[in-house]
Length: 364
Image (cartoon, rainbow, N blue to C red):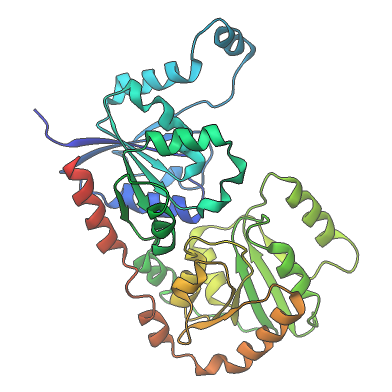
């Protein structure tokens, strides 16, 4: 009889966001002598799905409802619960591992199954404004053990719950970055290149990035944002603004493979983060590891990463103030030693976090 723990991971779609990249690393690297692994996706078509290890059992949980589903719901059938029962009948989980609070409402079904539930919190808890009080209560009452992606999130959790919690820090895959930059020669350019990255949404402050770009000559500076458009009104407004006459100062890279993404970051003279909130900030960490100085707003997570060895934090969101800081950091970029920059984020080690995670999962 197998003594391996059976872990079912829940996430949205396995696209290349920070939280899902962390999850993907765990799916790849967890010790298969200890664990059998399945994953439930709420949407199909994620960028990382084709790269999933072959032994990971993949399930799609349809989150939309047909007219027939709605009729069945109104006569008393819990359609979503029945969909989960079909998955559990096949996989027979010991553990549910919910990735991000965005997916945490599935915890309300956990009491129907003999499972131990983990919730890996990647979000700033004050960003839960999209959830109702009832939904938030369900999450905090149903989870058995919290994982926090950083010291910042662990501190927030400590003041609102007595449930067990562990810091499993977000980390970048440094070996992968090294492989992307092996034999890579940065292209020659005649402009100073400023790069930002992340989902195009209000939290990332992309409109601030756009406003800053307008304060620089397009003959001497190039501004590039790497990230997918969010499916929100914010994206529509920003897209129209960028496309309008006199505002096309930013190049948006919406589709890019992982290797080219790292190379695009590496080709920058400066990485600019305009985030309003960050629980950690993996894109900043990637830039630092690539030897690119970072100018970041005071987003919370930036203070965990940015220091005098790798960049600066600006405590003002006004574009003109940030633009001036861009100029100052560009002038000082030769003062940053790339080896020292790498050492400044050395403690964020995926192998260390993986071992910590394996020990906790093995005990449950």
